[in-house]
Amino acid sequence: MASHLPRQNPANGNGGSGAGSPRVPLLNEKEAAALLGLSPAVLKASRLKKPRCKGPKWVKFGRRVLYRLDDLERFIEENMVVPGV
Image (tube, rainbow, N blue to C red; front, side, top):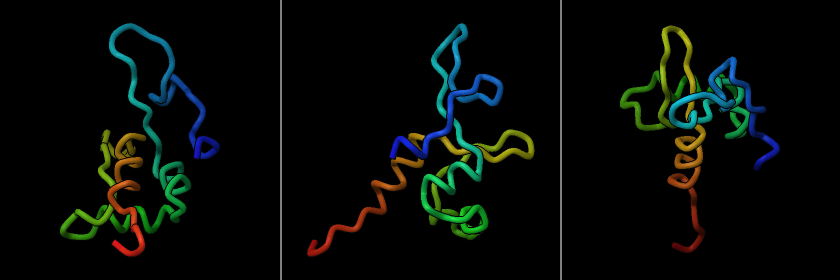
């Protein structure tokens, strides 16, 4: 799964060095969709549906929609289907 992770880039809030606490890896909609194997349109639709419990959590900064890597990984785990259970 590591091949789908974005490169660390301090300019967009993804990693980098700096003072204070370590930065949380944030992915934009296109990167998050690629990680989940979805189209960005499907990911966007999951945010707009009510109740909003169908898709992963997201963070909104102005008009930007970002996803924390931890939330995407948690979403994958929570939606794991185990045959025979």
